Image (cartoon, rainbow, N blue to C red; front, side, top):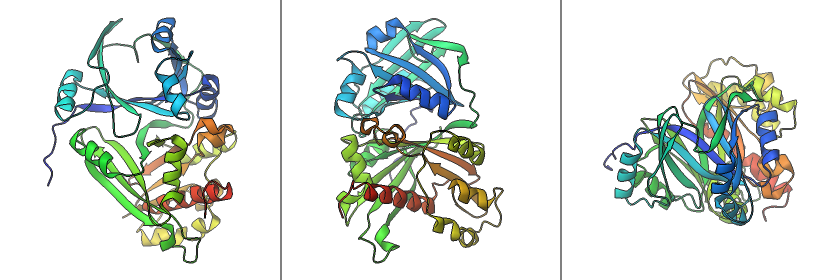
Length: 385
């Protein structure tokens, strides 16, 4: 049994940095469609230092920093020269940044910045970045002392501009990433980050679709930090048809491993999805046979009754899974390239999830999502059969 690592003192995911080519388009989507509040923007000092302009959006504690490069230099420009739009940095609030830095570097983490200190109005901010096993995605660890801004040189709007969080998002439930091979990433998460294994599943569509074109599969492992509740889900493709897997295709489209989707926890998924259907948002389709089989599945899972109407779930194509009388509801928006009709918007997408006592990841729904993406990619001629 592996020795338990000393905690890094992670408090929660503070923000996700989403590098985009069209800031106004992304801002409009988060604010007008997902009803995030616009809580801040870059100042001239930020733009000169980062060579990017930024807007900050938030719903509950889920926060995205949308960054568009200015000119042909800077971090966001370098990212977008190599990748489509996507998550380039995950930021964690920590109790003690210097302690986290010492622990991580002692475990072999590669710092890309060294410890940074900044005296700002209201206090002090200390942070550092490390390279990760997630391709070009960086992890940042930040300690805020006093009442400090989101990031140095970002102007905060008080009250927020636009947005009211009518979809009742509360937090980031989990972050899912795709890899061509999981082993090195899992070892890095365990031995450097000190995360522990939480959940896993493996399946292949040919196991449940006899006579299908051959099918594809995946293995998924969720790692977590028990103190903060941070959960990182991680996928790799499975043979046969390894290169036809939508996990492999993501890595090709993204030009390397990276964050596939972010799951937003909501307190009212039925109302949220109904509201999103009234706008331009597009969802991954779910076949009607999923709902035909749902009553029998509920019985097998030991779920006697659910609060939601099964007719509503069918109409809105919301997925349900669970066990022992507890369940979860989830649905997946289509990837950004489909939302915007622009291949360079990338394969990143958003999940909505509501938990009714079930802490898992919906193994049955996992298969439904996988098959849904697979059918779309086959219809678009994105994978060879």
